[in-house]
Length: 266
Image (cartoon, one colour):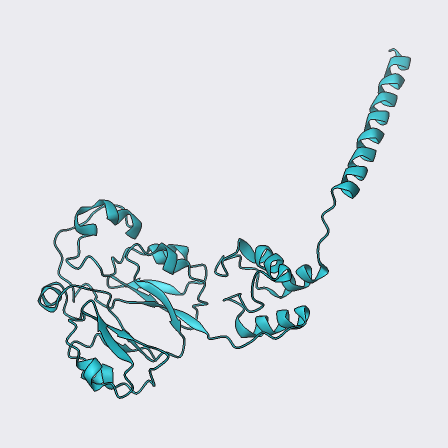
């Protein structure tokens, strides 16, 4: 065995290792990215779900945006007011008042309430039904398809499908907005958590058409509008709409609705 060659090889490897080590050390100093220590403190307060409901790519993205002044201290929908207050303290500011929200599905027509044009045996994903006739087998092409795309994206188990229609569990929902984004019919929205009465329909067809398609759809009769003592209800495109800022949760609209489209949330 040629020991001199072996020693030479080891020396060369050692020198190369030292050079690489020095290079990496210098590079680490030269290219070091300075981070605000508040960013790490904020990140520790955030829930870590990385749901994207805040509008940023995960909790790290939100923490960075808050430190830069690009996002509000109470922008995390999962953490809510409690986390917002802690982050405000880190930033030396006030969190301000936040309105707790919850996802709401503007449809309550079960399989027993809706008419069906044909039987569908394809992929069980609402997003795929845009490729089939009439946007799905149900006669009302503006109602819940019931194949659970919203369920698949909810990280909190806050939404489920029962008898052909999506239902939100208010206690589990954190208003991250993922279900809102994925619904191809745009039926889901975020509404104030304390909204007691809602219009569970998104249909904009005229009354006679809606009556043929669905037993519980809004027909735009206007009884809710005429009887609301607070002028909190109006009809747009043959569908009732509640102004939650004006609504006093008296329940008159729900009482007068002949098709029980306006429902009590809790």
